[in-house]
Length: 118
Length: 107
Image 1: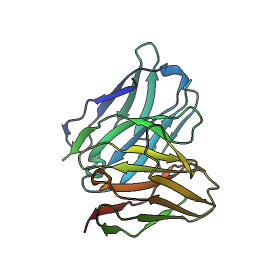
Image 2 (image 1 turned 45 degrees about the horizontal axis):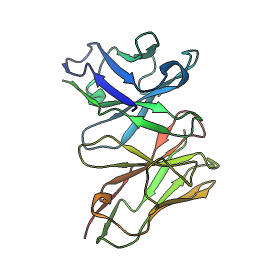
Image 3 (image 1 turned 180 degrees about the horizontal axis):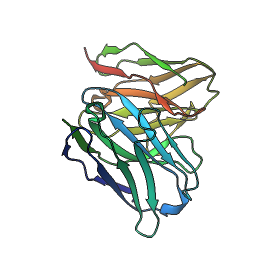
Image 4 (image 1 turned 60 degrees about the horizontal axis):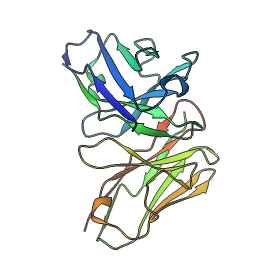
């Protein structure tokens, strides 16, 4: 069974830093691309970052480019999101999501972790 | 950036009724469109990929259609558990973008 479990979300002051983790199991981590998607309170979904299966390729939304860094550790089956220079509008539930084998969707999602910047 | 517009914003229906949700893209995304369902307090769940393919374990009452800029998600007969928010997502061009969502609620 595929499982994604995020952790690391907490209350943080503006300008602060935070690292989110996503523990994965039930699939071979280094054969799938991964994403982070966030959802501000009461709002819709916002894709923020992607990493290819071999970590060679990363993409970021303009809203986080230069502040957030995505990384993967295939030895530990972990996905990370390093978040720096946090702002109030980064307040959201952060989901990790696996990209499907053919890149046509995010087929599995974690339950999310809440980051509050205030 | 490709902008997705979903309509209506809210759809009020009764169990057993048919739901038709629309997603329109600001430029062609070919068939590179997915649909997700999000129930309150839960993570999104993949329903449809490549515009018309049902994901694993998704009931047959869910169907998707369209290509280019106009897409439709149809729920043929609403079950209680289908009252939720539905998002479309384009995967044609980076950045990936989501529509603002359509809430299907009980009339």
